[in-house]
Length: 284
Image (cartoon, rainbow, N blue to C red; front, top):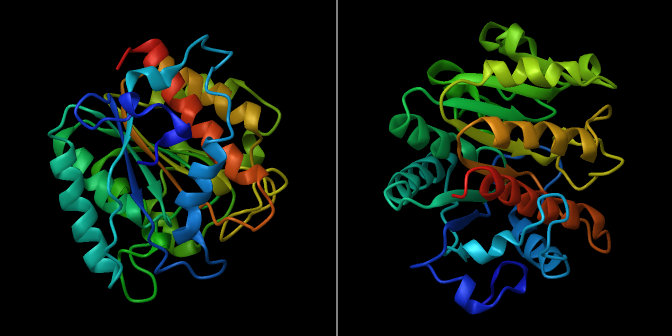
């Protein structure tokens, strides 16, 4: 059995692990760079070469248990993927585990977030991304990656961070007060407390890796210049996990580039860092 970061099997058992990791390797609606369906093996390989003691939190969060669930293989259409992911997530939410998801492209988040806001009616969604992803539909479907947060914008308290690309059709659905454009927050930290205050109730985090600048994360389908750096992202996430009730998260849009291991490692390290924060501050 392959385990996250090569941890001992006793820490990866479904029955006892506090964290469940769901892979959804779907890449059916991406419109430029492909490869997000190949992300999970690259992510796992990078994790296996990662130190699993986290210096900042002085912890080894894997000891709480991380179990990798069977991947969701549905890929026949965006609509079928949405339905499968939605119903699977609703079932997983009955488990009382800390649920994490790994894409795949960003459209996988639509069904996940719907299941979460049905369980948590007062849900806030924290969206870190280069793109607003608020289109009502794109290329004939509302389940396109460009529509990933449209439903959330209608049914949750949505806070967006790192945005630097959008289309005019998305403007009616944009909450300008709760959208922190990358160029406005560059070199500043005061925005973090303000964004934190906007997150109310339980928080679900959806993190598109293209929120990072392409200089550190080139392995995405749509790399946008002017992105955030590692320190900025983890400083903000630390505050979120420290002060809010995070109920789950997903990470999407890693499109591995052969022989370029740094971005894969960043994704693995970030995933583990987010778990380290969660269990440091809340113990579950």
